[in-house]
Image 1 (cartoon, rainbow, N blue to C red):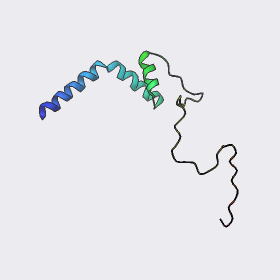
Image 2 (cartoon, rainbow, N blue to C red):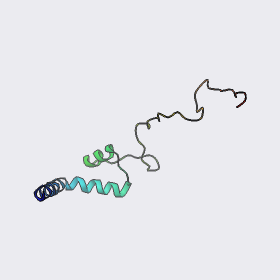
Image 3 (spheres, rainbow, N blue to C red):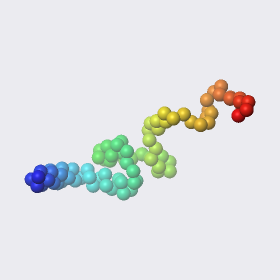
Image 4 (tube, helix red, strand yellow):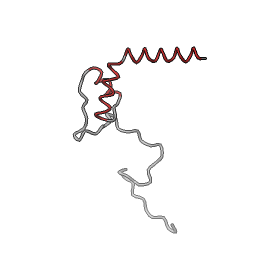
Amino acid sequence: MRRFVEEGENTAREILAKYRAELEIIAKGLLELETLSREDIDALIRGEPISRGDNGDYRPKDPPRRSSVPSSGPGNRPGYDPEPQPGA
């Protein structure tokens, strides 16, 4: 068992040493921006600047997924004008 743990530690150290430069770039990006998307990390590693919104906040490129739970209000659905139910 001890041999497996030591081999795993050695492998991890080799990987960290091999990718040390990329690790440093990502760490600096995280210190500066606090969050990084996959696209941000790829851009940093390629040496490209990261583009953010006007106020610097992270804005995902794709809109967030809709919930499978329907909303409680009518929202902006055209033709949705419910009538009050008697006795309710």
